Image (cartoon, rainbow, N blue to C red; front, side):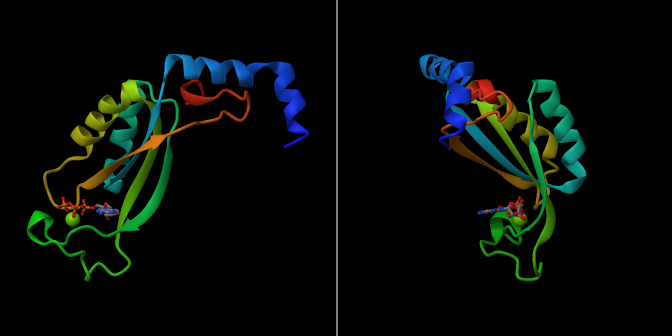
Length: 138
Ligand SMILES: Nc1ncnc2c1ncn2[C@@H]1O[C@H](COP(=O)(O)OP(=O)(O)OP(=O)(O)O)[C@@H](O)[C@H]1O
Ligand SMILES: [Mg+2]
């Protein structure tokens, strides 16, 4: 920590971008979408079209409601869970609804198990190479 400080201050990028983000009030959200593996490529294409700068994809197993809205208990028959893909995307607030809408429209088949989207407040992000902060970094 101590050894990093002088280099960052010399370049001046960290403090400038921190101020810029705070001035503009650019708050961010993290979107975590659990989708069907077969829908991954199409969702990635749509997010690319919106101009998303990066995303994280993880293969997961998950459990939802067994029979959609009718049955409120998680499926016991799925064992460790059904294979799903977990996408995580950090976006500035202005892009949130477009991202959610793109995932919704693309991942939806109208059958149970289409997935779920969770939205989290994201207080900060840091681009390691440049030291940019906040919305400038995503
Ligand atoms: N409440 C939850 N908390 C965390 N993860 C969840 C939750 N509900 C669903 N998931 C994740 O989403 C995946 C897909 O869930 P699923 O689409 O079956 O949701 P659902 O609520 O049962 O909706 P549907 O009625 O359309 O099946 C699950 O495998 C799990 O990874
Ligand atoms: Mg379900």
